[in-house]
Image (cartoon, rainbow over all chains, first blue to last red):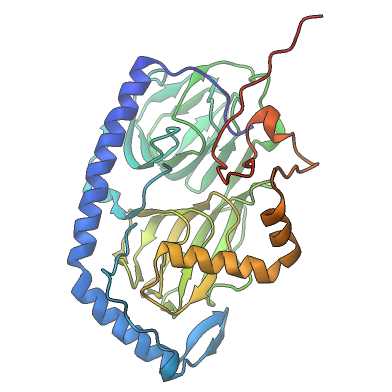
Length: 84
Length: 317
């Protein structure tokens, strides 16, 4: 039994509405912060794609394999989203 | 809609607020980390003020409590840092107090926070699933036993494992100079809070002490790194599988497609069965029937798994 059916009071409903509204604000702030991080992220991605060709990518625990240049994915034209 | 993607969020950037939810005693403060707008399930950092007292009582939702600093007393036992409580819905715990104060993480997994004063369990409560452990003193670190596994240097202590959903709650650490060069996503939602330390992910940057995320399924995360070590508490809502890859730009839909395609290859017979039965209503003989309790996702050939059935009224004889 994960939860027991019950009726919510008006006060509880009001508390939830406030929290949901605040969470929407928090979410928008996170999206804006992450958008601002894009230039750094692009650099990190470039370094990652370089490393997996030289040192390798983790496949399982300490097992790694080197990625061939032709396996490196091409960046799509759409916006690079990290928060969904 | 379930909980949104909250990542990253650092709770040290916001102050504690008084917890005014009806039913709860005064003296508790909180920071909301994430909340499900549909059912009110949420995760909070909480602070019990010195002198906090709560009578014996129960919650309508399953909840988990992890003590980070200070201590609480439940009944006549003192629980310090590292103490973890798994409290199923309807289980009455003894009087709780915190003479000198405490901070912790509080997870209400299936409904909004609730407290009903009671010294006995609700008739539907499952007492056998109640658990208390001190994760720091009573347990030792082990490697993750997933396949494929995280890189060496990520260690876990499993605090709770749900036998039906395979959801689990775990303390984890990353050793100094931990690194893992791949990108991962899961079929489950995952959340975590940094008790101490900073780790790095290629998408989101640094997550410091007090950092938190709630990540819905199929969202890329990684590569990973940690210079000085990290101690954190994590939780999933169902089985965790590491779908590793190295394409930084895939989106949720592409990741989900890939996961479904993998299921098709890993469990071809089951995949075919699921896709060819009009009234798809799998029943697990070990658990109660979904229609009666409304807890088993299924559809009626229309693909809509999120629906409910009204209870049938019993005719009086």
